[in-house]
Image (cartoon, rainbow, N blue to C red):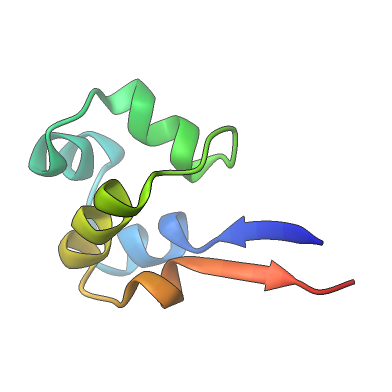
Length: 67
């Protein structure tokens, strides 16, 4: 099972930079980049903060491939 995220697509939809999202949720840009690139998965608290900034639900942040 593979997990993917929709962070980039949703961030770009709102025309935000990675730095803008990171600043808004109170983390370093490099930390946000790790989430967006799939290197690291945000904890629940951070996922909720990101979802609010991107104006989507937490469930919409992640795509899980069942194969």
